[in-house]
Structure formats: C-alpha cells, structure tokens
Length: 259
Image (cartoon, rainbow, N blue to C red; front, side):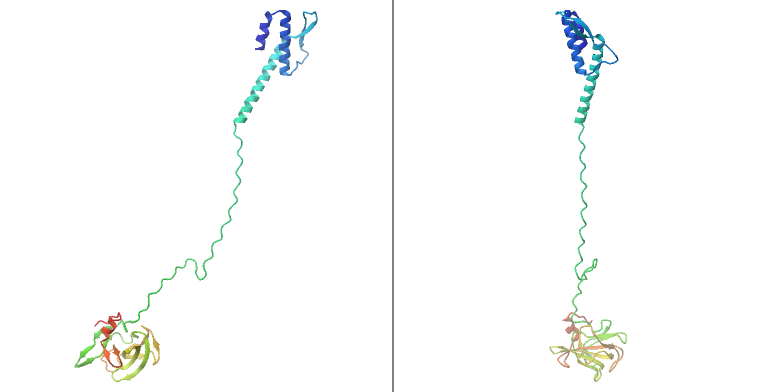
C-alpha cells in the first residue's frame, strides 16, 4: 500500500514528490523503529523550492523499510493471534480440595445381659396343673363293678419299674405299706378334700409331708399287695376313702386316662 502511494506520487510535482517520500520514509522508519546497517545510504539530497537542500529516503531505504514494516505487521498479527488463543483457552480449574476422611463411628456396645447373635429364648409353655400319672401305661381296667365288687380305680400296665408321677401338686400324706391289699402306695392331699392314691408300687420315692409338683416322681410301678401282675392302681378320693371315677375327674382337668 505504501509503495503504491509512492508510485502514485511520482506524477506529482518534484517538491510534492519529495515531501511525500520524506513523509512515507519517516512514517515507515518510525513505525518499524529500526535503522539500516552495513553502511547503506538512508537518504538522497534534494533541493527544495526555497533552494535549501532536503533529505529524502533512497529507494533502498524505502524497500528495506517496507520489508521491516511487513515483518513488524506479521509479528503484530502473530501476537494478536496468541492473545486471542490465550483468551479463548479456559483457565485451569483449581483442583478440588481433597475431602478429609470421615472418622468411623464407634460401634454401639451390646446391651448388658445380651450377647451378640444370641436369639432371645422362646418362653416355655405354662406347666400343666394336672398330668397323666403314668403315660407309658396301657389302660387294662376302669372304675366300676368287677368280679362282684367295686373296682375303685383305674389300672395302667407297663414294664415293671416304670416311673409313677404325681397327678397334681399337693402334700404326701402316707408313703409305704399302710393299707391292706394295696401293697406299697402313696397318698397325696391336693386340698379342698381331694386325694390321689398310687398303689402296688415296687418302691416309693417320697416321704410323708413332702410337697410335690405335677409330674414329680413318687415311686415305681410294681406288683405288691393284691396284684396279678405289674401295674399302677390309681384312685381319686373326694373326701378320705370316698373313691370317685378317676377318668371323669381327670378328664374335667384335661387328662384322658382311656376309660
């Protein structure tokens, strides 16, 4: 552009041409801020209208100034491009601070009296108030008339020595050979005038005055007294020696004796 302007100025008057050249050279050299080296001549002497000698840039100086200007323009463009690239590039995101580890919570201590992993035991069913005196026994004779007289109890047969149990809670009245025909027997008072009697035992396991609970062993099955074989003769008394049907009395208390 500047060279084209210089060429166009060639058709002007000599003094205008000289002034234009001086301005172009000065502008070019001022923009570049550089000087020629190696002994190159920077200007020619031209006589002005007033007869005074003026310096104008030589063609070599102009060409050199143009080259310098182009390099400066290229450098400026490169600088602007670098600035745009830097502005477009996102700033490095600051690294997020590392979260401090959360301290582990202490494990809760087990409750006193309970061990970890131990299941709470299931409550046992309530104990029965009345039980079968010899559940292993087979019913061989019920309460009623037999051989012309009253059979006042129930006979339960099992192997000799089978355990005999108290039918309910009470107090032992007698234990041993105390009544004719019964052999070794145990009589228990259950209160309210009711008694149970266990006869023909091979041995007794309690003594008079003992407190017994339902199912507690009171003796062993045998064949003592008026007996034809090992069995338990079981009686219920509603009042002393007032025998009643043990099957009906025990059934009313939830125990089936098979009669």
